[in-house]
Amino acid sequence: MSHKHEKPSAERRQHARLPVVEGMIEPITVQFPNGENSGAASGAAQPAILTNLSAGGMSLLMFLEPPHARRLDMILNIPGFEHVPISGKVVRVHQKGPTYNVGIAFVQISRKHQEQINRMAEDHADCDTRIGLKLPEACVKTCTFHGLCVKSHKMPFWPKK
Image (spheres, rainbow, N blue to C red):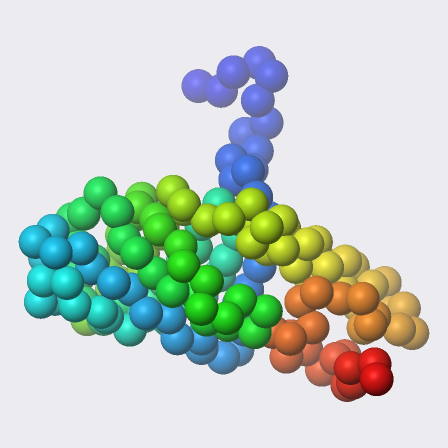
């Protein structure tokens, strides 16, 4: 039963999500806490594939069952986020065959990086709008998502000297 003031399909997410690299994969390393994991050696690092990102969390594709831990420590290393330490907690796990789609909510990430992710998500959405409207210049130099973009509309922008 829905409440009077709620839309049946209302979005529950607080932050806009963006694909990390559309049509490609982006690796990330997850560091399991000592003595709290279920699939890897204690304190071991496991590679995972980052599929989307928001200021509040991320979605990963993992090849071992994620640990039953209160906290996961990760290093985000994608264009625009080089060696950024973040911590999160597992909030969703869907297993499909030998892989796990894991939703992680951030419990520790700098405000600066949250704001940067929000700007990237906004720029990505704005680009999709410009493409949908068939505007002549869908790609703009001020786009903060540019380093991760693989759209056919992407223009090569070189750094200013």
